[in-house]
Amino acid sequence: MCPIAGGLCAICGERLFSPYALSAPESVRCGLCRRIEPAFVRAAAYGSYEGGLRELIHLLKYASVRPAANVLGRMLAEAIAVLAPDFPTRSIAVIPVPLYRAKLRQREFNHAELIARTAIKLTAPGRLHLCAGALERKRETVSQTGLTRHQRRENVRGAFGVAQAEAVRGREVLVVDDVYTTGATVSECARVLRHAGATKVWVATVARTLKASEHHVEIQFSGDTAVDEGLVTQEIPLARAAGS
Ligand SMILES: [Zn+2]
Image (cartoon, rainbow, N blue to C red):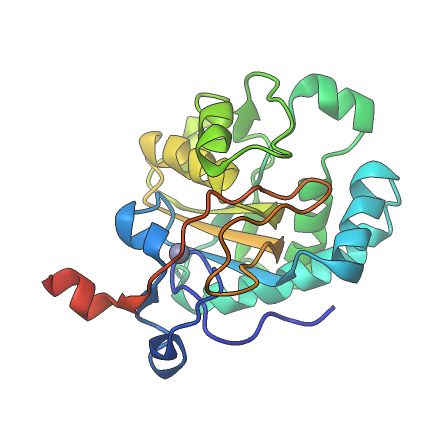
């Protein structure tokens, strides 16, 4: 379980294989982030969603081993620390991706909220303010497992609503979750939060699925990882992208 290293997209944190990514890490975007401007400013993750980290997340989510949230929360705090230099000086509203109420009753806790609580405790006091009820999941969504990127976007469209507009209006917000797969869920959360008046939305997750190679056509993991649409990402520096 090691932190992600190497060249990454400056916006969504996807792994990049271009030499630009290492020479100018602050200004390189993946193909997707160049094509569609995400509703969030930047997403950071601690580690790759595989191996021991994936098992730890599953222990918390599916086996209800709550102490796992302490370890995962520490990792989330590290992901948040990457974003924190650009946070506003006033406190930032931390919003865990909510579960639908039936799912919450069944699981008895929102894993994203548990992880967020630990991370907040480990971060400088006063900087992060938990607003767990600010966002709600308005309907049940089918599992994202095995869906394409496009299907994932459709699956979560309209699934979230802002329950406490005063908590986000005119504020910067940090959305937290366990895993960033295609970004469909956090992007939809960010869209809804921006619509409700959040000035900026940041995203931090414990783990992220990462492209394994530059030329992969399709990846199919077992379990709850995305089936990639087969987009081969091309990376160019922001300056060149803006000028073209
Ligand atoms: Zn990207």
